[in-house]
Structure formats: structure tokens, C-alpha cells
Image 1 (spheres, rainbow, N blue to C red):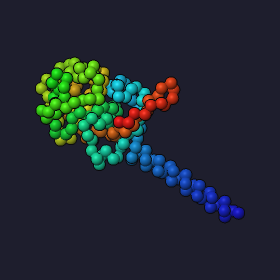
Image 2: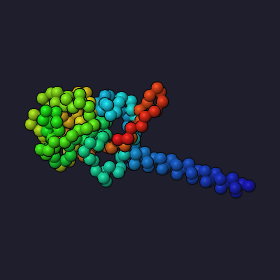
Image 3: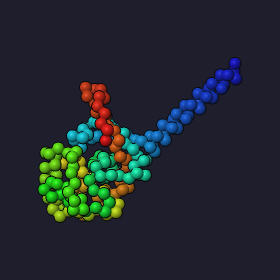
Image 4: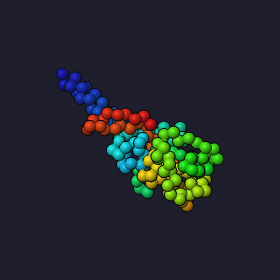
Length: 184
């Protein structure tokens, strides 16, 4: 009888240890969570939305234009959309995006947000910018309320090493219940 109890306890301890170890590996090396603070990504993401970010696979697959990423910038985690990729020339002409001289549609933003892309004298709106081989150009969907790459004048924009994850899914709370799932 004692031998059977010892086996059961050993198996139970083994299962608990494996569970803790696997959850640690998943949460620190494969997936992570993020919280939306502020209105810079509205109407795609809203204040207090919660989400899951990929922190491993995107490094192998790469970041693509219009992905939503989480970057560590100025000791803050920011959530923005990738507009420009390394080595590209980015320019807004009349609030329309041009990448390497070709017009690119931004179908994910509202017309009001699109019209506010160049509300100030941003360099990217007046003369354009060319990204270095390890730089990305990130912009919030709510152009009027977003602190993003449009404001960075003569400095490195967002480097590849600053990107710490790619948003996969977000959850929106309504009436104190998580009701809406947003696949990104």
C-alpha cells in the first residue's frame, strides 16, 4: 500500500513540475501577453484590450507590412502597425502612403484617420525618409493620437531588436465580460 501511495505522489509531483516548466517555457519563449494602453490603435485596438503576442516564430518568419507589433521604445512597450520595412523609402503624399515610389493602400484605417496622417510637418510627409537595413517605420491606426515613427526626425526609427513580439489575437471586454475576439 505504501509503495502505491509513493508511486502516485511521485507521478503527481512529476506532472506538477512538467506543468510549471512547460508554462514557463511557453510564456517566456513562445507566447506572451500584451495590454493596450491609450487610443493610438483605434479602431483596431482599444484601451484595455488584452492580447497574445508571438515572441518566437515572428523572428524566424519575419515582420511583414501592416503586421501589428509590440516594440520596446524609450523603456515603454508600444503597439503599432508596421508601415515601412528595412531599406524602403517611405513617403506620404496628400495622406497617401508611397513605398519606394509606389502607392500602397492602407485599407485598415478610417478615412478620418487617413486624413490626419500628415496633420503636422512630418519629414515623412514633406520629403520622405529612407530606412536603414535594420529599421522599421511604425504608425498607429489613430493617426491624430499616435506617437510613432512620423515624429522621429534625424534618429534611428524602430530597430529590428526593438520589436519584441507580433500581436496575434486580442480580447475586448464588454459589460465586464470578455466578449469579442479580434484576430490580428
